Image 1: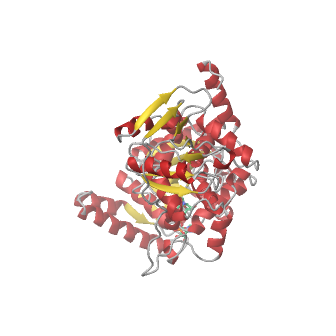
Image 2: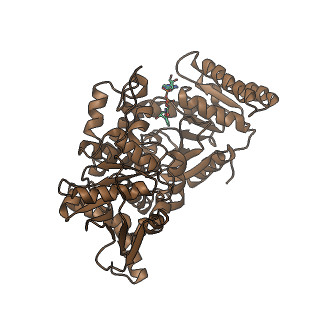
Image 3: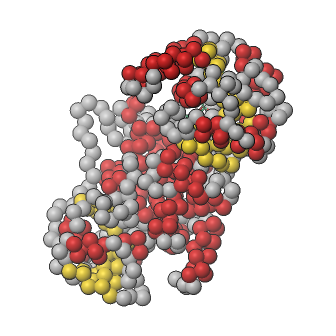
Length: 505
Ligand SMILES: NC(=O)c1ccc[n+]([C@@H]2O[C@H](COP(=O)([O-])OP(=O)(O)OC[C@H]3O[C@@H](n4cnc5c(N)ncnc54)[C@H](O)[C@@H]3O)[C@@H](O)[C@H]2O)c1
């Protein structure tokens, strides 16, 4: 099955933000494109807006003037749905309401030919439910573009229960021919990206709600330690708190209020108060004129320890002893069966965040998971009220000697990055086990759709196969609500690995 022939006209119905973007993509790829919108005059305005964007591409030397002129000539606003009769593909990007989309599809089915592929750009409705309106739902798929469609490469090609394989394959190949990176996925709440990305926001908000740290500190740790491009607070301020919350809400409702997707009370309050982010001048942060940007907590300089004793295998943090030596601090390595930690001269210990709390142990300071301990410019430490000041000071001094800023946060199990990554890895395993997508497509979708530095499976392989399971198991013990309960898929993954490696750990 191949992509649609370039000689086949494509139609976009609903010419708002997404419709215009999708139309531009199809147009630049070489198709004739028809635009239709329910509001009279809007398709014509959309054609003008797309034309202006093509002009800007020409100015930036990203499109030739002749190609622009040819593209403009291929772009036709339509007055009536009947004008789409000869189209080989119709993508709808109308209002996000099931009844509206179903009604439109019923009308379209009477207009277009038998072979016309029909697609929806819905982000939160079920493709199967929308397609239920059609006499032939086999020809109907989801083509979920991301905003702005001309710039973002990812397209989730969603197969509803009744979609034909041939329709999905044709949509997939067409998206690829349009220069996009398609991933195939099943019809599930949030598809791939909006399902697996939920903990990125939820865990940041949960740490805040637990008084673990303020938004600026959590954002700084996610960026500078976790390697994410933006923190959850600044990103949701950019997206709009109302928009981000409504995706969370819709995924949570669609999963019958599965506790793993529970929305955040703190975000609810923000939305209720009209603090929607940058667009209203205030969200988690204040964007009004004259307001000073919030600074993350950064520890004062402390004296580094003269030496550390590295016990056991530090797992994802195994690079640390070498970095500590490079900083001129002596490291004595000792085999240790009972734990993996750095022992400080105070007698206190530093351990990688593992889903336990500092207060449960005598003088333990946790440090957060870094994407790359060498490159990280900030490390979070968590300590309890009982931690000795000397141990905390040595821990701070140690990471400062490695050139890192240090943020001390509250005694939150799983800290910030570790719990976030563990939950993303878990939801990714769960999704693949439930047939949502392949591991490869999940990794591609999360890297391209939300800019993660690594795909969840790539990350999981780096961290060690049962790292996420062990962390979530510990977290689940401390919060038995079910929110952190590792999925059966993750359990199987960890257990199968242990068997293969002949290990009992
Ligand atoms: N905005 C995003 O970031 C984004 C991203 C991915 C997917 N989506 C999805 O894309 C779709 C459109 O979203 P948008 O942000 O472009 O909305 P929008 O409000 O910018 O545009 C919707 C357009 O559809 C038109 N319309 C409404 N009902 C119609 C009908 N029955 N027939 C023809 N036209 C009709 C409206 O007049 C409007 O021009 C939604 O399903 C949304 O979930 C949006």
